Length: 118
Image 1 (cartoon, rainbow, N blue to C red):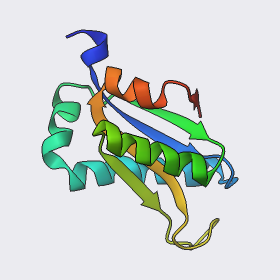
Image 2 (image 1 turned 90 degrees about the vertical axis):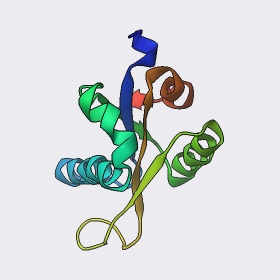
Image 3 (image 1 turned 120 degrees about the vertical axis):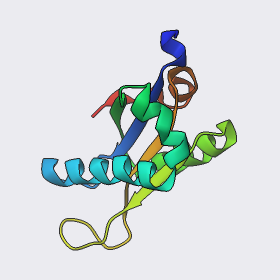
């Protein structure tokens, strides 16, 4: 399999919320478990053949994340938006991060290749 065809999952986290490391880890965990729970068929290849490859990237604002989510839908990339319950560091229903895919590296890189690692 060509590296551009490898299956991966990309999680993009909002940095403007100033979440602590543990909070960010929990939100990324929610994205990973939610995509598997809500999309078992699509996640199958990622789990069994993609070695669960993932990248965690960052954006500076909610608007930037929402723009990515809209672009992903145009590209046919599954989105897994994570909204917080609001019990600790952020307000209830705050969009904290979004998972994109699982999908091919080539397709996801077109969407998120310009972003920096968290």
